[in-house]
Length: 245
Image 1 (cartoon, rainbow, N blue to C red):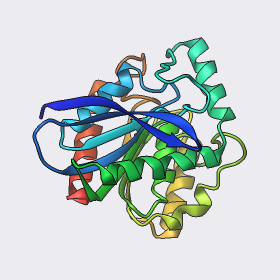
Image 2: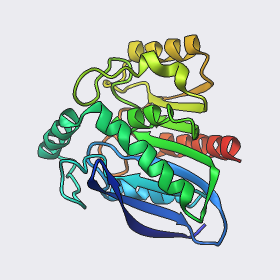
Image 3: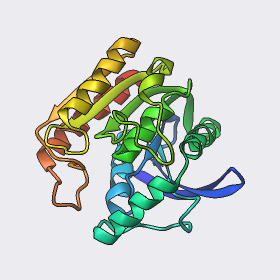
Image 4: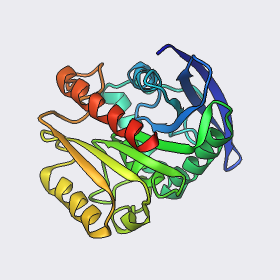
């Protein structure tokens, strides 16, 4: 499906937040997806993921997660210096500030004329996977896809300690968790802690495991695994279409 691309501006905490939006070109109403990037924000690797998802029939809205700290349009390069910069921005952003972005984008999706307001989901990668998980605390979120989410199992997210494990019972929608078994950032014990907490909370969830490293769906890095990424995409799109149909 062909898509359109644009940038919109939202105000959160009296600050400007740029949101990159990709949507199906054919006229109609489609499910909306709140999309979270990794620490490098919306560079080519991330916008290609946004665009790909939109091509399956979703209106995808991706905010710049560090809009309080970085100038609008900033792309952090995925090199050693960029890793330091991105991790520092992640550390300096308060958990409450991350959480405030979700309802702002959800509200925008619900009022957009191309979005089915009752069909809202979320998706994210790395830190964005954790943010997508927390976005699922919002009652409007019917489906959440969390790809190799960091910090859920140990509470690492911005300033302070995240209470994500303790709040899983608040999730009303369905979850799809995507992990790489070779991922040092979410080791087996971390995955098990997440699964145990989801099960105890009675949260509807599905776990996908691939013999792959962290960020294996990011196509510009040495850890990219095209076969695992394609397999994950097939599962992700089927899940979103089923839940948001």
